[in-house]
Image 1 (cartoon, protein in one colour):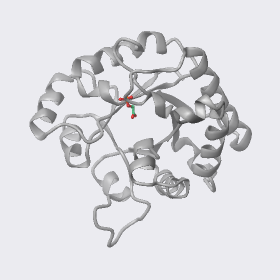
Image 2 (image 1 turned 30 degrees about the vertical axis):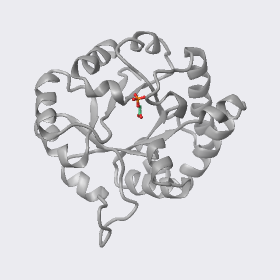
Image 3 (image 1 turned 90 degrees about the horizontal axis):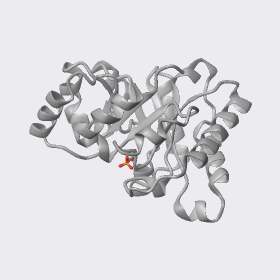
Image 4 (image 1 turned 180 degrees about the vertical axis):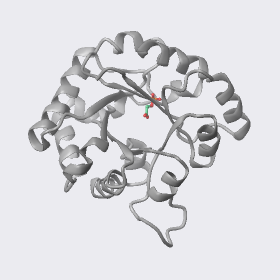
Length: 237
Ligand code: PGA
């Protein structure tokens, strides 16, 4: 992996004026993938960014009020999506079964799909991190077809690290990321791109970037401030 990937997950933030300002400030830093709210996608596409969605429907087309389909995002020039973010699993009761459906819908339409997995603090304290990771990988990647393996990106996001300012040690991240790569290699015969996510910011990126096995970062809070996000992008370039 030569170039590391930086993905900005904007979650449910920014108004239209803020988006317009953001796009101007981030000029020349288009070597990232931005995941804004659906409504702002055209602004980022028109400005030349690579764009992803924060979620995707498990359905292809039809009467599903409020949903957005894979074909719709593709028709907008969007080639990435996040699935299984812990905030969706928690706040919208998304099960592994649903995450698996969404993932298969996206990868089989050649959308690069960032599958988020990670342990809660309780699971970490109990020493159950690997068990949780293995369970999520097994369920979320069920019945995937070989033709689409290349479309899978994994984001290791310890839930206790998301938006908290707490991050695991480099050794711990390395251990889990290699665990993830090994599980997938042993089961499917390919090594996926694996990102780290959880309180990545402009200050800790230098240290985090030393973990060779990590192929990039999924950034939440720090991507909302163009200066902080630029610093992160610069560091991994
Ligand atoms: P954070 O969010 O960087 O604010 O911790 C990461 C994420 O939720 O993807």
